[in-house]
Length: 339
Image 1 (cartoon, rainbow, N blue to C red):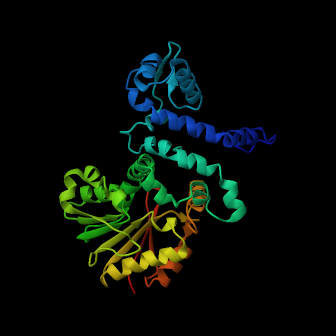
Image 2 (tube, one colour):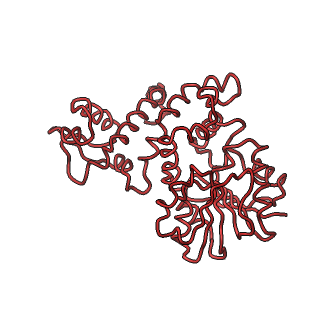
């Protein structure tokens, strides 16, 4: 649908769909939870068989698939079978990129509840997460391992193919060792080690985040040291490069300066820092601004930032003005060095 008709009817239709978009999000989340896209192969599948396999009620599963098909997600046939569309293929686990994990993460219980509290944040200026759940977001994830697993999978299988995009956009050939600071279960490290056979890595994050890294890294773990730690406290010293990928946007300016100070203290004079983030204002991608609202809901002082705001942070932490590298994903690489 597109706007611009003189009578405004197209704009009205677009807005009606946007107002109800949360309903489609939940439908996609349920489809991912049931594994429907993975259960449908190259040939049409009988919906009754899909229901038996997924533990769903046949008649209501039919209606779910019929509704999704109305939006071009799956193709429904007159004989009560279903096959893939180009859109539904993106919900398969094995698709690259895949939206399977994103659909489940975006609609998991805490996120679903959190967005219902947006008015609280707008009225008070405070993140709704802790007000709703009584603990900070990362502490909540420690207490809810199933949701933590969804978060880690979402980060590992970035729907915008962030890891591969970063590896393709930056030349790591002159780097021997790299530290992924706050690297979760190692999705970015895997992409780096696969492309650069000479590279060795250190994966640093909290214990609950790195606990599944051995499964993600597989044989590559022989070239990676996994360390449980706190990037507000310290980082492994003396390496060629340090990466902060989608870390700084979670924190206030004051907390970002603490993280940057830890990295700077660990770095050699010739080490480089690579910050991977959305950068507001580069191409006015609406999703960048959705992410900014999400940060506002989740963490005190968290935000997506402009290039000028990142440059100001780096300067205050003792780093040079950043060099900006765009990737084929919505994320950019900000390269800087100690001064």
